[in-house]
Amino acid sequence: MSAAMLSVRVARKTVEAEDIASFELVSTDGAPLPAFAAGSHIDVQLPGGGPTRQYSLCNDPAESHRYLIAVLRDAASRGGSAGMHERVKEGDVLAISAPKNHFALAHDAQSHLLLAGGIGVTPLLCMAERLAHAGGEFEMHYCTRSAARTAFRERIARSVFAPRVAFHFDDGAAGQKLDIAALLAAPRAGRHLYVCGPKGFMDAVLSGARAQGWPEAQIHYEFFAADAAPKAGDGSFEVMLASSGRVITVAPDRSVVQALAEAGVSVATSCEQGVCGTCLTRVIEGEPDHRDLYLTPEEQAANDQFLPCCSRARSARLVLDL
Image (cartoon, rainbow, N blue to C red; front, side):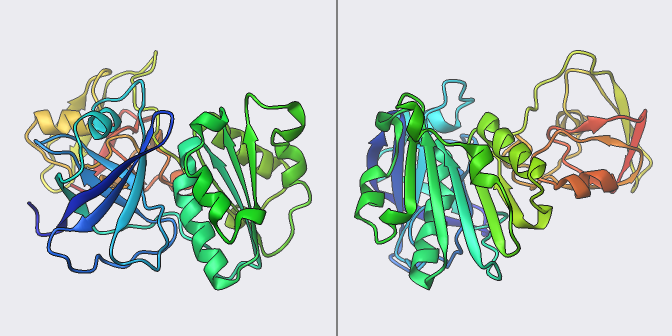
């Protein structure tokens, strides 16, 4: 195990809703776990050399004796969520990273609007715990397909912040469904928006917020995965390694990370889905074709860095700081 990884034991595995299980993780040596802030996630290495996946922490950040994550079984799983559901059991030992946070609360905000779609509730639930403890002003809207697919519903109902949470079910009455346009109307200074959930939900909320004039600095979001699959019309291009001048061709059906690995050049990766930022690489020359969900639109427009696990090139060649 890498020195940067922590050894934890699965103390409890719980079915929280249809196709959703939570995992309570505790240190194998009984020591307190590293502190974390609301919005943090951890990398989880599946046993037996399985894939590494990122899962948001959803327990109270004041707790140091455990981490709590929840995993949705994805029908299109490449081994991550299916492995967690089918292979990981209570008592198993897992290797995880220390918490990382790319989705932090804006502590200078005057009020907070939390919008959760499905399993995207996990980081927002942690935020709600923190804000309730700190006396922050917030409201939370939690959208799911049905009550049966709504994880942590009982926990929320028992919480001190229950009156601040509204549930919205796709299969429910029209009147209880979330009216995104109405909710996001008239943005005001000091009010910050946080959104996490499936891509369709995220796109609807983010486009709605921007159409209503929400400043980018007041919009915070975290996607699950970028679309890293090859697209019709993708062509080949070259990447040059600035340190050696070596040129490697990236075929239409290969990612930059794959092409580099096949040429014996290793790039650190984790999610391989364009969301975690582990493989972020500086671009010295050329124009990337950004397909990640990690960089902000402004960072993408600068074209001085990209995520080679999913992004490609608009120019014939990229010169990389490798």
